[in-house]
Length: 71
Image (cartoon, rainbow, N blue to C red):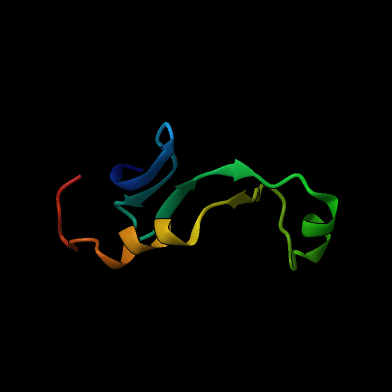
C-alpha cells in the first residue's frame, strides 16, 4: 500500500493527519481512543481494528482531494 499525504491539523505538530491510499481508501493518524465509555459505544469491532480521534476539519482534506494524483 502506498500513502499520499492530504493534510494535517498542525496545532499538534502534524497530528492528526489524513492520507489517501492507492487502494481508494484513507489512513487516519490521530489520538488513540482509550476512554472506556467511548470504546463501549463502538459497534461490530473486529480483531485487528483500532480507533483514533480526529478533529472534524481533518475530513475536509478528503473532500478536497484531487483524485488521480500520483502516489
